[in-house]
Length: 462
Image (cartoon, rainbow, N blue to C red):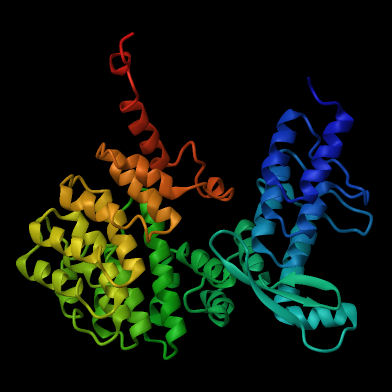
């Protein structure tokens, strides 16, 4: 029975309040109005924005909720998203063709608001708005699945410190090209090791799209900047440029490959060098194996961890490369040992297979897990491999057990059901990572069950 309009309204209000984007999408498909107003009289899009719920905001906007609707206070849902400092939120509600859709005055207002927050600073503006004294509360949060940002709270108000990213994104959408130096200055304060700040990643992504000779000259100059963070930014920009060429099925330009080759020889800082080598491994260049071999005994494990990706350029690999890779698989640093697993699994040699079996018994759990995943995905169906995988079930975490199920199911191993029992009930969030009905590991298990289902000939005769 089809729900009434009133029922749909109540249910979508509740779903938005609960930040349940999947239910909101389903209700919209049933006929709920995307511009439904909440108990406060505001469109539900405003509630999603206020809750930093970019997933629900995106669902509502895609279904037709108006991000440009002028509210009683003179703002719009889009302007409120900019004010709150979440680039993911702005991206969710900005809608299609904002440069053509929005009048010049509206575009200018959005840009000025983002720039004001960025130049003033989140804490200072919150202090001005609330009159509060004392320090603000700061905590890192995920802005989306890939980036982090600080959430800043003071005097009862909370914003996110992503206004630099928002300004950069809006400029790109509105066809504005700020100088390379200005984009660099927006990024470098937000370099955080082992994390990706949204202000950093957005500036890097936009810089990667700047393809004019002058832009490339300005970017190349960062290679010799005295500050390591500036050089690290250039490495990330080149990585993004390469990623864009993959997306469009193009090859990286020769100038990028030559830059990386020369830089890989000269870079003095291990943190930057490791990133340069990582990016260098993704392009085609004749000197990669030679340069990689030169770093096999580098004192910094971050650098040694990038060597395997450079030295195995041929199939079969050269004798020197194979010997070096085996030595790295016995490196004292677990991160280095783990870095060898993919390349060991990619080449079917007895020595590499024995090295992988050794790594399955490694003292480091992450190394064992990586070896199990990569070895399980190979076509090696020997008892040595399957027995080694089964031996990990009692100590493995849930997702590793699922990987072992996948490996055994592909091999039609009768211990597949035993491995599945070790997986247990998957958490509700698992479906958000990869819906169970589409997850390749679960599909492999179901296929195993189908192939090994009882048939009539297996049934006892009457």
